[in-house]
Image (tube, rainbow, N blue to C red; front, side, top):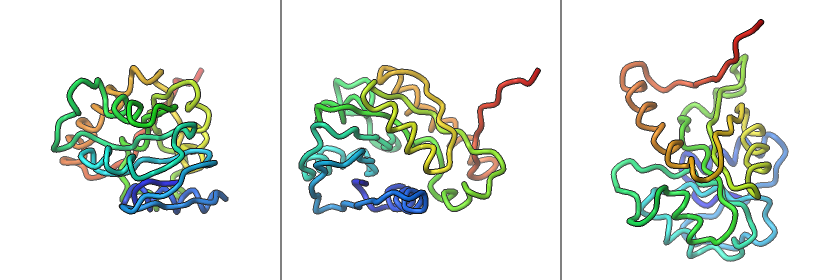
Length: 178
């Protein structure tokens, strides 16, 4: 399920459908998430509270927060947007899909090696988040529990700086070979 039908929400919904998932896309009207395996939150940061308030049944559904701090500040009193999302859902949360360019989603399958995807997650959201990252064609790179979500959020600043010079790109994490 996606909450948000923009470039990120619709783009990932398409990738997940190609991987065999049944995906429900919720827009501004909201809807019911009861029974979903996971819910991707893909809205502007300023719309998080409104979007989450319009979705019923999120209490036990892992929410994968793909939002970014771009123009607006983080909500006061929260270390990360993912922490803010957790305060609104009171359920498991992960931070992912915020450090890759949505306009490259249609090129992921063409990549000889899966592009990387940093993510942070609560224990209850880690496994499903890793699976959804893989099913979208990316290599999941777990960076820790939700206390590391701000680091994942801040990575977008490096992405934007590099993209300003070279254009949108994939990143990969590669271990040295023997």
